Length: 261
Image (tube, rainbow, N blue to C red):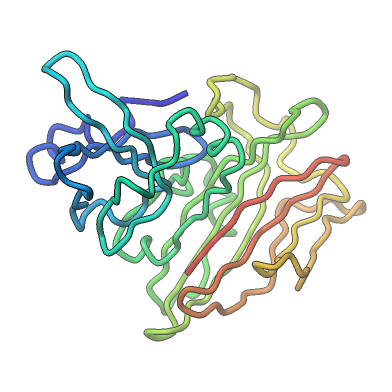
């Protein structure tokens, strides 16, 4: 299901300043829709929409009220959409079902965030925010995301906090924390649920750092006694274009988030 209101193309300011025709797919990312002239075999894509897109949909306009969906692609060729590379438009549901969105952390340095990454105070209270202070002497960018399990039964709502700080032009410091979500929240699917009754995490909640190939580098597990109010991975460094994964496991369920520098 798409969310038109969350798409940049429905933002009147961006409509006036940028050539965007995007469609926000909750939990996945932005699809860019580009108008194609059938007499040409390619369609140029503006620079401003060549990043932060999970795919591109080629559209042919029949008249003011009718368009034809030619197909879609998940990559560009020399900054263009080539009509001979298009996949059948009927494959989009399957593509989205298997698509693993990747959070591009370097975009945070330019204050560009995906919609499901919010300021820390959107999910955390004042006492929790005290625990998020990190690398005070360096420029730090922080965002938090609501962890949504496949089943919310017997699993408390959690917040995944990511803090990044550039070490130099090639290296970034990354810090991961997991907090309970105390206030009430609404999931991306529109389901409303009560926040955790306790300010403490459940015992045996595991957070792991994995390489792009799935190798586990580090795992931290919440304690049984005393219970933790927060768990965190040791700060690590990641290089430009490097990818990694954060995995949470609890009560035989898992939540996975993919990142790229």
